[in-house]
Length: 405
Picture 1 (cartoon, rainbow, N blue to C red):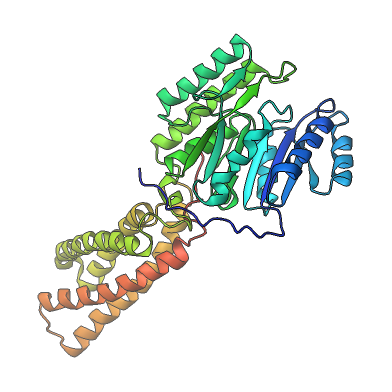
Picture 2 (picture 1 turned 90 degrees about the vertical axis):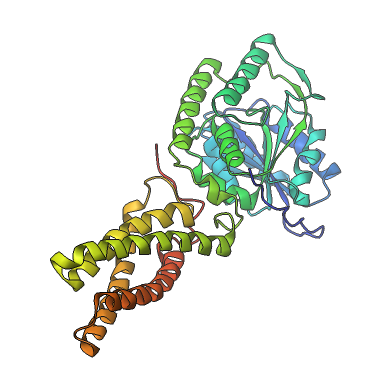
């Protein structure tokens, strides 16, 4: 799969935070203060850029919000975010969406991962080498302390991902990840899960889009006081795997469009013009054949309108998928409606040309009609491309539009 070119490294001179580390929490009054203070001190001592720590509280019912508010008041680089609904994925989505730091990260509040891995995690994103970075407990060089039950579950889950979704990353659920903000802005609208499958879904979409995922081995010590319901989480993960598998099989995720940093399909404007030209050539041939078949029975104007309408609908559908990289049913009717308006402009141009021919040469031969219509269609085609690109399929949609399975 083609990958994106290297991104521009971040400048070494920043006044605003370069890194925002999010700590998602739910009823963590016992560990929250010690962990955040430890993380804050580590970043102050070792991280060479401005940073921010965000405590993302997702509907805690204990003293977690009070502790988070106090930490935000005491530690200058710390803030907190309160969500009314529970869900780790929801908390990460909200915190990352609101941040303006160019690099976004998160780690679990129990600090199971050794913090010395934090700088190596985000360094490839700062340098522009990678789009996403993840810690892995399953790579050579990792040192992991956990019980056999969790070890078996983790390895089975990642083996299941590799066998069903053909992923290449080794550890989907290690709570130690980072992503460039410009990449997150394109990925987050596509991630539907708001719980524990959030990480897996984001990584699967990113990998299928050809984004660079950097892995680093980590030292990891299991938290014996973890509140994660393993059975319920496993069932939710299985449902998530089935859902995203269906979406990928049906072409309902715009992974092709995500390969371009500005949302354009691979090849940019030049690639779009080539694909649009190929679709247009096929459409023109279809139009000529339809016109020639309909003209003897319905007359030249009606034959032109019917042939142009049928080809316009097919042309819009083909350009939607092939030229501008939008897949699935989401927005298809709206796109066709706009496409029909563009068709109306083309119809006016071609019909006007045909009327002008008949006014100038009332007895014009059928070959002359076809020649005039082909020339008018070439002009209408250029107008159509410009309108499709700027209005029907604008850049803000390409790479973000999707639908439910």
